[in-house]
Image 1: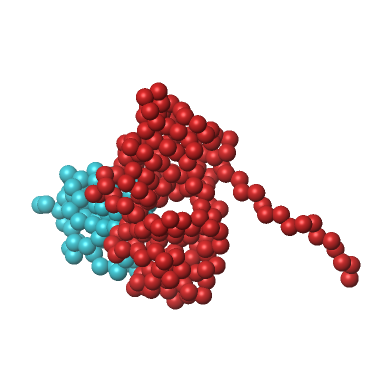
Image 2 (image 1 turned 120 degrees about the horizontal axis):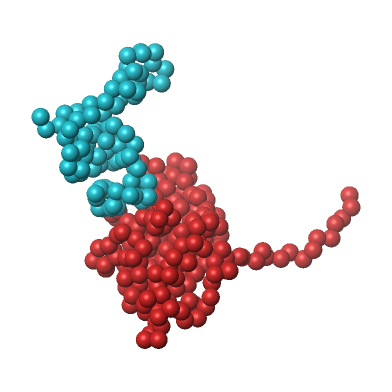
Length: 205
Length: 97
Ligand SMILES: [Zn+2]
């Protein structure tokens, strides 16, 4: 058997679908200040976990064991802790995000087929963050849901859409939201978000 | 028109997809009862009033819902998860007559 010399292993370069339209700097009506900051957060892991009916608690305790995130009960409940975040987006279904890659393998063996399923969407979703004093205002222009803090508490998640672009939204700060959209729609959504932010002045980080 | 999803709360109707009359009862797939299949495919109450309907929150949590909607006023009288199979209103809505 001929031994083949393999080239030095290289990590694949991660490409963003936003790259051609991602322009760091200040834009729009920013002469009087920048009221929102837009960025792509590029988490290494975006997972969808779904429990069979009646297995929700076991799934939630599995999420706690792996991530340390204690999900609150109730529709759309969620939690953020530094590099990790989780929220309910549908009955028995949760999105779990980690800055680091490889989160799906940490769940294998723990979320057994009798509890539910794990779907690794790390390459299928794009994560966009909007923050700043006018974040609620800009989001309310795009989505027909209530972004006020009492109606949309810190850590909570929502499933909705903008012109048929499905979006999962988590409040990750008092004036900060993380938006998860399909990767194939991300560039179009990003451009819409930039247009919506022009009037308040925005900065791309 | 707002529909209150049991999971997501009140949402605009554009987030939902109508999935038909909620009064239909599908025969067992192996059934050869032609009258039952005919009724499932064609018979509709078409009430002027409260109507059992199936909707999906397709632009949100994607849950299938049992909705009672008034066909005259578009008022949504009740919503519930379709999972479990029991009708939300518990009546074959006959309308206000
Ligand atoms: Zn819903």
